[in-house]
Image 1 (tube, rainbow, N blue to C red):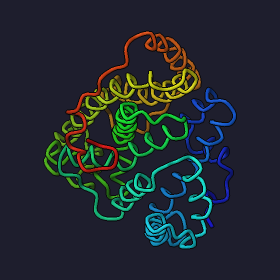
Image 2: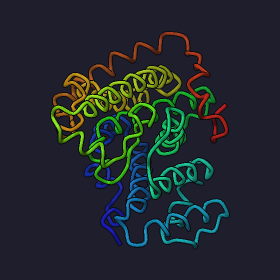
Image 3: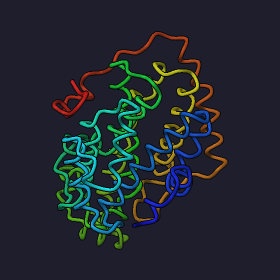
Image 4: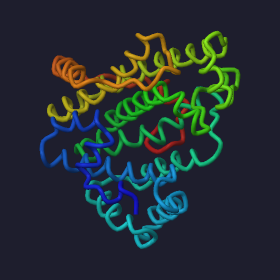
Length: 304
């Protein structure tokens, strides 16, 4: 078995999810433990999809079937995973949507347009926002809509940060109609050429992607008022830290070819201070969700 299956949830979060690990400090022991467990399961599923676990993609298909049919003997992980989702009232349909997004990465990844990008981001990250609502004991339908948006925003930041890394794996998440349908190989060639107009085109697409992320961050963070105060603070910290990655990418001219952007401990602390200040939002009326943000997502679980 791979190391991700052997790691404790807390160690998995500390090693592989530094931004979330920082934010989890604000959740308290019990909820923090459940959040770490959710992250650990998602990490294992992601490692299966990437082939970092033996027979990972085949196991992922078996897990999908097992969840839908409540056949928890289809894979070794399913006994614990099934117990976890039942304990936390997590929808198997939402978890299956996450798996569908991970399985999508097994095929050629070349997303056609913004709608395809947003549907993918919902599957691999909006679903995690929904499951976190369960962990935090929040089931308000309006809260769920905003949770989806925060997950999408974080995934768009991931994509903006990892354009070069994804291209090395043969994947292009930037919408094809933003980059003249460039292939991953063409993106890599553009990154290596200082004078390439294609390099500038990809940089512009990254900038456009980060602007789109800001729209979803605005909606996602506005919905945090539906959470208990402590959970509001913790998720706000995670959102601020992730958003900061995008702000740094943008401030440096969207140089997607120049290495992966990271946040320092000092920056994480500054983001935490911003999150504390945002707690004053709780004094204002709960926001209405902008339906247009989910127009491309209609038909997916908890959307519409």
